[in-house]
Amino acid sequence: MFSKKIAILFSGSGSNLKAILEKVHGREFNGVKIECVCAITNNPNALGIQKARAFGIEAVVINHKDFASREEFDVALVKKLGEFSPDLTVLAGFMRILSPVFTNAVKAINLHPSILPLFKGAHAIKESFNSDMQVGGVSVHWVSAELDGGKIIAQRAFEREQGMNLEAWEEKIHEIEHEILPQSIINLLSKKF
Image (cartoon, rainbow, N blue to C red; front, top):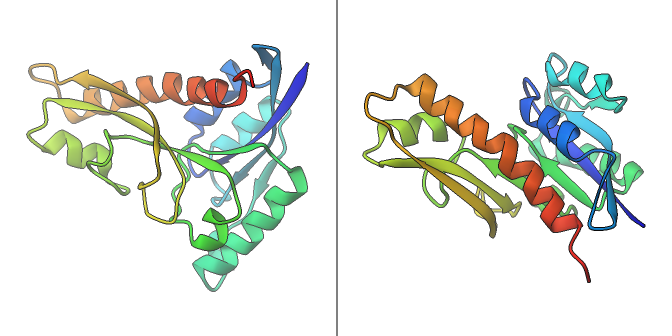
């Protein structure tokens, strides 16, 4: 049996981190066992830290406020990831724009709460909800130097329901995120070669 290692980067509540750990960590898919070897956050107050520890995963805090520049933070992040040698790094609600210091060194995927290439950036949920779009959705893409611009791996859409408010829109997005991100990890790491 093959074994593949993932690292998860997060900044907040860790709901996607938890979904990955529940659906992927320590499980075997197509003869490949996938294990999360570390979870890293830039936020010392992130609720996801406790969620990682509940699964016995080391939660590492690298506070971006401790660094003079984005590049210096990314150097520390790349160095820490190197200690764990993950086959894939997963950005699951990691609210940092990464520089080429990271994007040129790390094989990573990102979860984004819109149908890319529409509504890039940190306010995608609100922007997509406030648009005339009759569909919302989620994208998983490779991380590149362009913000939310890497090659798309998977997307899933939903239709706007009549009278849907922002809270229901966001809830639907999170529901899809918790399915599409773990499935993308499984698909990428358990392919037969």
